[in-house]
Length: 411
Image 1 (cartoon, rainbow, N blue to C red):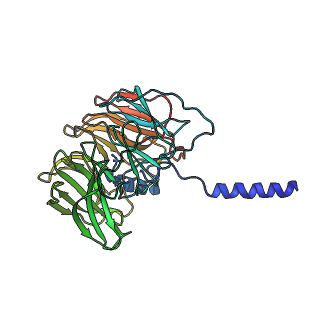
Image 2 (tube, helix red, strand yellow):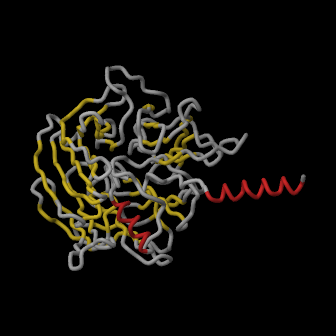
Image 3 (tube, one colour):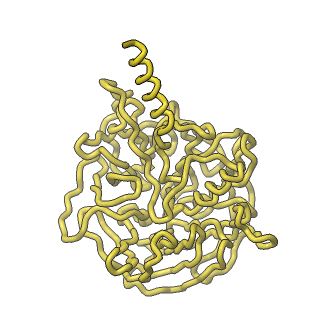
């Protein structure tokens, strides 16, 4: 009997070893590649994934080119108590939310100085999914899967925002507008093959802005929102074809008018990153990708969207995010595995480096301070399956603040 039990146990362990749980950030590292903050659509993860294949940089996984990154809720320890309760979060203060390590349905909000300022308690009936915050932490979204789908919006205290107007509710993946209130996404109709830009204010239904295209090549191509600016009446939409950016639209949010339209040669770019106010884009080079054509390598370029003028060349490093005030960029360069990760923050107008990394850790989700110059960045051991990570706040002057402990993020 003992022999039989041993054989069953060994078989079970072999089965478990063959099906290890996926990294909690898988889906993150789209939209951006869709968005972000994460990332809009965060297409930089496509380049990073290819770099993994080359052994250049180990990261946590691929992101969908259509959906904004969100972190999976880690499993709770049975009968564990939350680490701390910091009370109701203050209204009107931008906060960075992470999951309590022992009770993931409790979100702890840190301000941009690294001080805990409040706790949001998500109902177990709501929290079984992916939780993501608006950049200022005043609204949350919960969806049943990493690829979006119908979900629910929560207010800053974690209470559901009731749907007050007709509409589909939930969202289909996308980015938060620069007012931190509207959510912009792409709706795809599987019957008509229509890709439509839609906006939604939590509590109201989705509002179509404009039909972008009709395309049956689902799986080969996709359209995502790179930036959505309610303040500037602009949206930037990117089509990827076989994982490479191939087309970009600049559109008015108010009436769907296409302000400008541009196409890219195959395999030229790895990703496109846009500033939240839709004023700038970064065309990130595909030179590190294995399919880059000999002699066809390009450097990363920053363009002003209003007239499509090139205003900076950060080099071969990819722009992961613009700062909230557009003065800084968070960059990731290619490197050999086990060597320095070449993460840096740069003043792109002057070309001066504000901060750079000193270790070999890989990066995960990142968040730009709304209206400011700071970034919140997650760091982890390359190849780690752990959903809890080190979190570093990089201030606009290059100084840093590390949060005490390790956390899974809500961004």
